[in-house]
Image 1 (cartoon, rainbow, N blue to C red):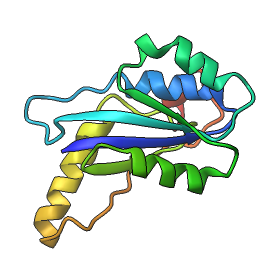
Image 2 (image 1 turned 90 degrees about the vertical axis):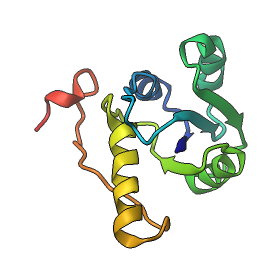
Image 3 (image 1 turned 90 degrees about the horizontal axis):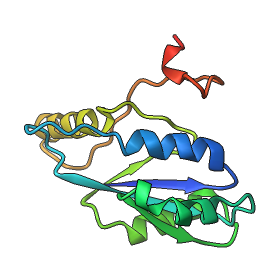
Image 4 (image 1 turned 120 degrees about the horizontal axis):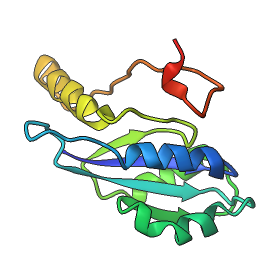
Amino acid sequence: MFFSVVIPTYNRQPILEKCLRAIEQQSLPANSPVEGYEVVIVDDGSTDGTVRWLEESAAEFPHVRLFEQDHKGPAIARNFGVREAKGDTIIFIDSDLVVLPDFLHHHGTALQKAYRDKGSDRVFTYGREVNTCNFDDPTTEP
């Protein structure tokens, strides 16, 4: 599996930075069904310097591909991201989501199991999440 992680964003630069730093720290063990991934960012007309920051930080985020559109909302941004995606599997996350290092591996493993159990690749997965306002150390929340 090659994942395209599609992330729409609008004026969320500080938390987007945490989101992207977390997704760049993905650990894919040798037995993982995930062969690789890209991160498709669709900036939805941000006015807070998000695009400039992403361009200036490109070397820190080798998986990121940036696209821009006028402000049309997250649904249209997601659809744009899907059209530009190169992966065989799409994962949607929002720009305020901070994932753990094994997120993609576990996602791939869950999809692989669902394919076997259902006999189809028409599945989706959900996982546990922590809702928090503690963006400095979100994994300390219950």
